[in-house]
Length: 470
Image (tube, rainbow, N blue to C red; front, top):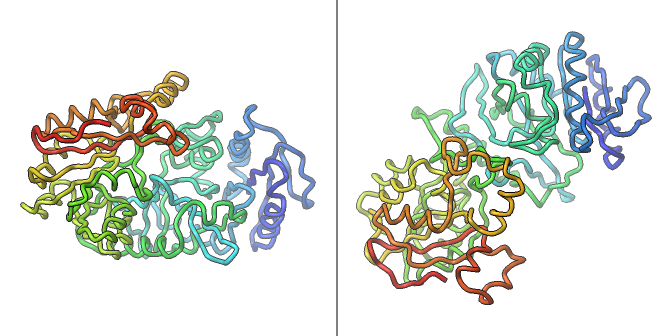
């Protein structure tokens, strides 16, 4: 058991973990990895030192420890000093592992408790979601991948550890890319060593570990009701005959997954403000949890949505948003000749292989009076340009979709995609950061766009116009 414990702020949690491991009916060796000497329980080893000068590199120290003792133990557990793993959960891990092939590893998801006892799941945020295409059965278990590999802990058997070391991706110097240093150290077995992390969703409670600090409770993640609803939806999908796939690949390959699609977008007032007041029907292409779509429904509009997948959209469907399932072509076929007043594409176009094809497809759902609202990242804005100069390595492959998972997105690029699809951009509004809102109205439309990390454009069919860029 390797416990990464920096400083003293989590000492009370660390002591609880030690008591938990000491209480197990297992022979457990505990090693604390820290930047300071921790006088702990007799028989608990403390290794002091950082793998690099960066304090966040501390978790990487467990890799050398595991390699040194790869032949001495049956099970290897890495954890931050506030992650509670019980004996019941370890035995559940061993039972699942017995039925998994060599390239699959059972993993965990963190849960937290608020002061009122309510439970939440902080790892489900931003672009992270259940991968509906990963569902599989292993004897009596149903398992699936969650796209956030980080749970601040992992467990490997001796054979799995040996395979990880042999892969060449385990014993590496501290680095970061998809995750920061802290998270990278805890996810390398899945990201670099050839394993697929799977959550046994049919035995979900045994694979949720308590993040004792509860530092994100009520701030980040989803509540218990939402998680349970998504687990139920995944279980139902596992029993269906047809294969299920997400609408498109929503994560980029850039540093920290920049420009990925947020599955849990907040209500976008910028988007809502661009929808004509006379509009009565809206089609949202690429709907996530559906905050904006639900707000439009509350205002009395009929809202149809082509969701990112059949799981994340469950809450929006319950609130009256009409879901049209399938890929882009299947959904359009289901819609038939039905026309809508507004087609909404929010942070979608830069992530799909052929934006022109999708724009052309849903141009067919518009009349001459309809509008299309396109929200997209502004990769030409001043702040992004400055970061590309200062941190050029983070943007490697940008501009090459195959390498980066995203197209270069700008107003000029959106205009080009629209033009080739028989559409015309006739109005654009920059989406300023809240701290820069004071600039709105104080500068020209061009200057405002140059300061905006994203923008919203109004698009019409053919050569229609009537709204000038502002």
